[in-house]
Amino acid sequence: MRREWRRQTARQAGALALVLLLGACSGGERPWWEQQRGSGTPFPAARPIDTVAAGGNYVVRRGDTVYSIARAHDVPLRSVIDTNGLRPPYEIRVGQKIAIPAGRFHVVRRGETVYGISRQYDVDTTSLTNLNRIPPPYTIKVGEKLQVPSRAVKTAGAAASDAAIPVP
Image (cartoon, rainbow, N blue to C red; front, side):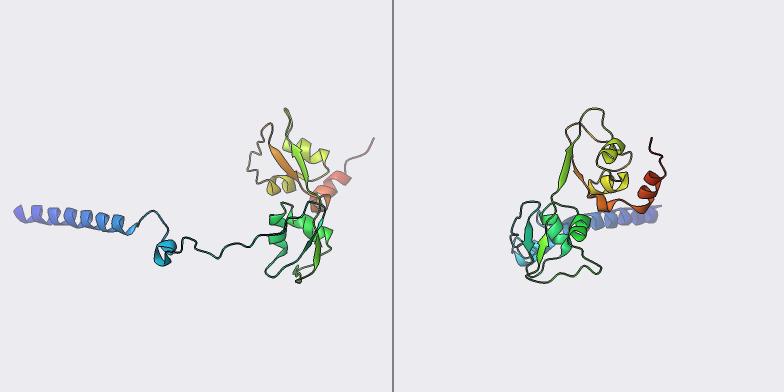
């Protein structure tokens, strides 16, 4: 009986020691990569990007990608690709001029739906929800600013279904 009690106590003490050891390993307030070097920034500082008004041109610099340019100018990636006639693998060169398409935005009004907005701008609902990261059940709020994709983003399935609708 006494031996069993000692085993149980030893197990509990071992479990407690393990929990305390793991808790001590969790570290301080900063991530491990900052503590290790003490730099305060885990990655090289991002270089400032030349801002171009939507609808302007951007001159490609070293390290730029089509994706980074689209994100920096807050326009859909597909719009940049289509506007510039780029083909896979979407390579760009330093010094190349990239046209930045004018972005389209829509502010949600009372009673509007994703479907209704997509019809208003002649884009498919999938492109609209993906671009704005709207999860199912695709609920939008009054006053929300939605980015509207370019018409070129419209999928073949959506175009085929629209073509099947008779025009009065």
